[in-house]
Image 1 (cartoon, rainbow, N blue to C red):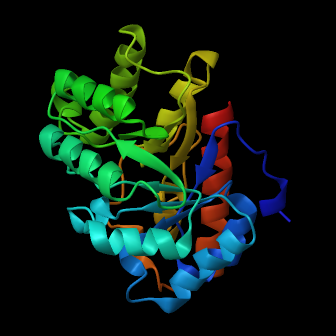
Image 2 (cartoon, rainbow, N blue to C red):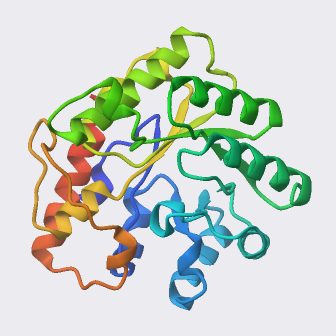
Length: 273
């Protein structure tokens, strides 16, 4: 009952979950977010997302660069895009590498432009000017949505803080605000926020000036619930560092489930106010 009472956000939210919470996630997620590297080794995981597509749910397929350190190889990724037919998918990129990200995006559009689903390009770079160049290249290339990550190392340079998660939170807000102020943002194109360091970050994007941010994904409420860490009213001071993909088969106790649901409620409140 509690899951069904939450208020939906204007910004579409998805929290990656262990398989035991798959059915619950259909109630609290606005859309479903799949990690492609798990398809090869977990038929149950794959089937869940096929069912989501067949039931006309919005599905984003990720190239698993956060989990693997590098994007899934093009040919295998294209095979899964063709088989799953997601609503959207994140084209292969390269962490903080402007040149390689742009080249991979160009090759992908040239070689796989007939695949089902809309293309999401991820901005990469080592400083503001590289990120502007990457953003503008992806925009010209014609990707359908542009994504911005939560943990660029540059954030720690522009917002130095003893707590790196605070640097990441304020760093992304600073980047988005500067891109907007400098006229770089294409407001007619939807945007996606990849992950988060501290969940209260999203309270910074409530105004109409950020209505071009369409969606976000983060396992943050789930990861902390699995670790028996409830959100405080203001959010968190730190972050659990393990990845949800490494806990995909974990058993979830009633106590963990309760904390997860409360975290999701608080997360929604950060987003909505």
